[in-house]
Image (cartoon, rainbow, N blue to C red; front, side):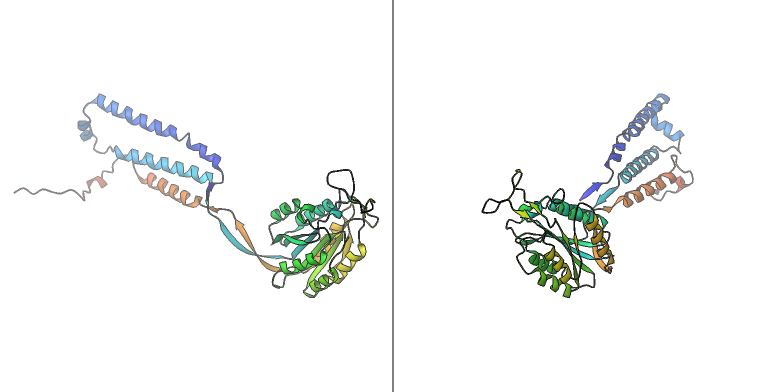
Length: 345
């Protein structure tokens, strides 16, 4: 794919028409003036060192060089390239609970939005780390494979909502199992799983999954979303709340005991989120404390710069034009390599 990084400079080609018009006009006037003085062929013998072709060639080289310089200013780019660099960082898989209970508003604006705010700020603090994302409710799915593309991570994060996982529940164990597999083979890089959940309606054996992660050198940090007192769960865009089969409003409460147990089994820490940034600061400190080892990362550069070739040709033409004189050289004109002498019998 070809493009100009600064296409606005191409508008400078429009004024380039002016010297072309001026050169053509000057050539026409010169011919008229020669005719006024007399026969052109006769006058040519009186001016043996005058060249009509050299000024034209000098002008053509100047014009092409000017066009190429404008192209250089527009910065032509072509193709893509891939650079492989080595970075020092850690690998982090995020497991985010998107069950309906995460819509409870015991922390503002609600549990899910607060979790997304924490994660967005956490990603902003990353520099040479890799991050991946898993969403879960009754089932768990990889939302984004592990990557160092923070822009994509924040884009995926902004699109997360409870409708992404139709089956309700809190399959923390499944989310941890998928996160373990998402890291791939062991490479000596420190790894961590961050689980953001209210821990309610727990379904599988998350403690066993956390212990398995810890046995594989993966630390688990749990951020509890909500309060022990809890809050009702809004239903869609209405002002009503979720009710049980008896018609009573369901109050969703943070299961701190479960969240703390998962973090302990995973060799990490548990922190409860509130309306401050205390949870973010705690998780950031824990991640910074992990050893950061070198890891390969591929960095894609969108376009290769191609202006060098145009600049070289423009410089070459200007040098040639400088050494080409408008008049014939009387010494060089005596060299007649291609003249054929006709012998008379």
